[in-house]
Image (cartoon, rainbow, N blue to C red; front, side):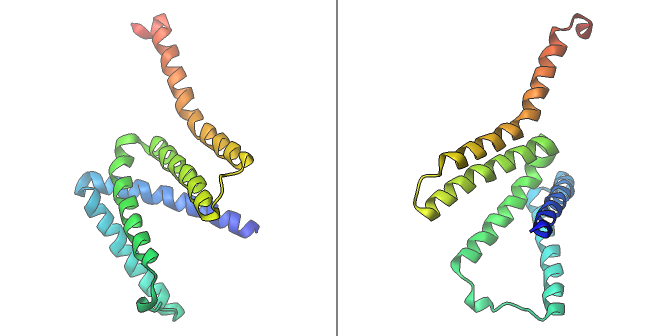
Length: 153
């Protein structure tokens, strides 16, 4: 289990690095071109990995959800490439993670055909509160700077 925790953390680091790289590229080439580069290079990399592992998938047996996941993934990269350099790494990441937490609660509720347990809702609320703390503290600091008489000179 600990291996999967570290793997998920490493994945988060790689996603952050990827967003930064794609965001910088999008300021030069545009969000959709940056997304195309991301997916072309990713496709080439995964093709080599699958060929080395001799695990090429049967493309005729792909479920419809596989295509929807591909569309959502491409939009995710393109939108992140567009907003990341404009909002900054912290704000963009916080908003993306908040959206993921909220959608996870909804998806779990729909799949289980029940309302989320109160403890699960409380956990999601705590995560969202924790994610919003950096923005709240930044706003409080800005207010303090505006109130300080020496800061207005």
